[in-house]
Amino acid sequence: MSVLVTRPGKPGEALCHQLQAAGIEAAHHPLIDFHAGSELVQLPHRLAQCDLVIAVSQQAVLYSQEYLNQHGLSWPSDIRYLAIGQKTAQLLSNFTQQTVNYPAVSDSENFLSLPELNAPTGLRVEILRGNGGRDLIAQQLKSQGALVNYCEVYQREMLPFNARVAVSAWQKAAVNSIIITSEQQLRFFVTQIAEYDAPWLLDQTFYVPSERIAHDARSLGIKHIIAVGSASNSDLVAAVLAGKNDRNHE
Image (cartoon, rainbow, N blue to C red; front, side, top):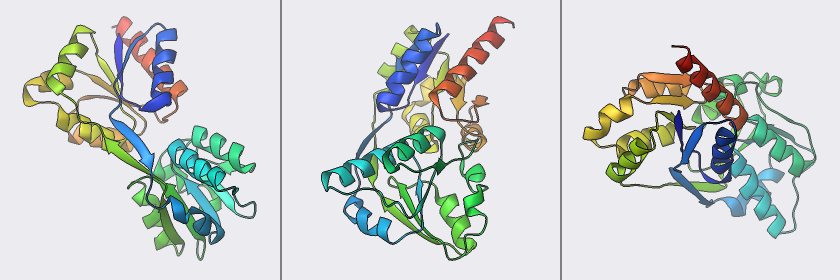
């Protein structure tokens, strides 16, 4: 079994190492890069004007922390903090020195069921994110009377690649599974693959964090999809190992 890991940066590299340590071949091909966001300069003012902060990713926390450090500032202690996933929550908790709640399943639907969001009327919410994403959370909170702002603290840049060359290399490496951790990356990946490589693409097993992304994958014609229910590296590795065992028993 050989897995193509598209998760970017150090988390993607760590995921490859964990897969390899579990006896699974892994190739790293990031689809995205990150840069500081256009609204980072507004972060201190935004934090001072809100009741609750939502961090959508580790990148949102890291870029925010770096900016605050550079300007000798710290996270407010009189507001509440939430995060989409466990790793993001742990990171934000380390920096804020406060408890950061998160849903057991890392998706927007489960996030909205957190007790902190049960009665959001009048709640001033700041969502720390990249350029786009997590619109469902904002829409739902606004519909319930919350005052929601976005702060674009980082930007995502998609990384085009020569699919013909890449697919040829992946075929030689016997890649038969792909880990993709966001809807944007999934759609970008599929659009990069040329029509004559579609049979290879459709023969892959895709591991995605949520049923929402699995639904998107099915709409793109992908047939073999496993919705892990989490975007954490440990859960992704466990799912791949389970998939490997299932194949061995077929």
